[in-house]
Each structure stands twice: as C-alpha cells, then as structure tokens.
Amino acid sequence: MPRKGFTLCFVGYADEREKAVIELTDNWGRSEYTIGDAFGHVAIGTDDIYAVCARVRSLGYRVTREPGPMKHGTTVIAFVEDPTGYEIELIERK
Image 1 (cartoon, helix red, strand yellow):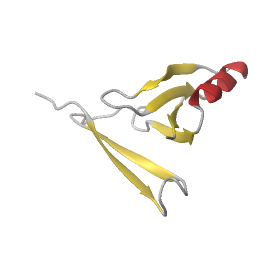
Image 2: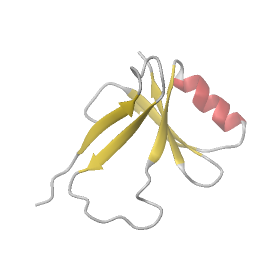
Image 3: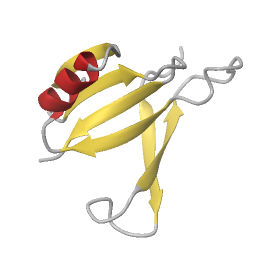
C-alpha cells in the first residue's frame, strides 16, 4: 500500500523570516512524474493572504485554492495561477 503524505525540506542561506528559501517536497509513494508535474510550485509568504487573493482576482488572474488552513494543520495557504498555468502558493505569515 503506498504511503500518503510528504516530507518538506527548506533550503536557503538564512532563516526564512529573513531571506528567501526554496521548499523541496518529497511526495511519498510517487515514483514517476510526467513532463509538467515534476515542478510543483513556488511559495511566497504574505502578511495578508486574503488581500493578496483579492488583488490577484482584480488583475484578472485565478485563485485556484481559496485561503484556508492546510490539511492536517493550521497554517493558512492559498494557490493562485500565473499566466502560463503554473501555480504559486501563498502562505500567510503568523
């Protein structure tokens, strides 16, 4: 039976509260990716995720996951789509 879930690793040169970091995700039970789905998304921290989503909509772009708590957690996240179809994760800072 395949495992469900993921492991996160944050890579950068300073604490993520101070500098940008890259989040690497190991999706458990996933052994193959097709072209286009191996790169997941970029994540950006924001102080007001609801205002950012409203601004994204006002500019004519799509919010593909409305702001809300992450599954099995309390961190508020949302996803928006860029013009080429890639998703950008928004993470509300506490």
